[in-house]
Length: 165
Image (cartoon, rainbow, N blue to C red; front, top):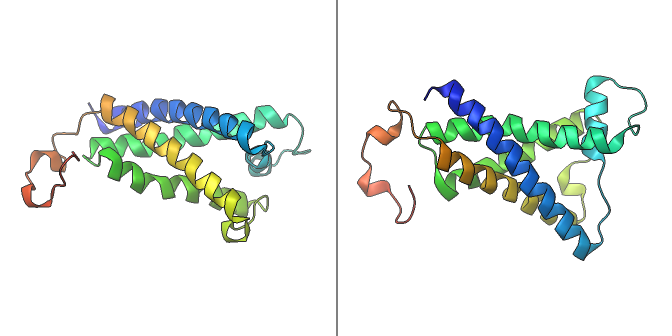
């Protein structure tokens, strides 16, 4: 497997991770009664310079949701190929997922810095992005072997934590 193959498999895993995250959001919304957020769709509209950012908002929302999932899945695929695997690697990936959304949303003027959000909204967002990263990571770790040139070729017995690859 090449690094390109790992990135492609990671993109597919990222799409699946986005689907898991979306399902989790819908389940959470049933309990919290939190309304849908169309910030991703507005962000996409602003990035592309589209007029009327609320037109086709559901389609734009899903496009942005899954595009970000695929894009960041490529990174998680490369991480798996580089022997950055398991729950700690998924934990490392979660802030990247959060930061990417925040950079794009705030750069386009659609979002607000997360420290200005109500704490419950912030917690919900962190949990959902964690679900994405862990679901994507489980898939990449199961489908992508470490490259022979990665750290998998060397032993680090004193540094390994029990239960982690």
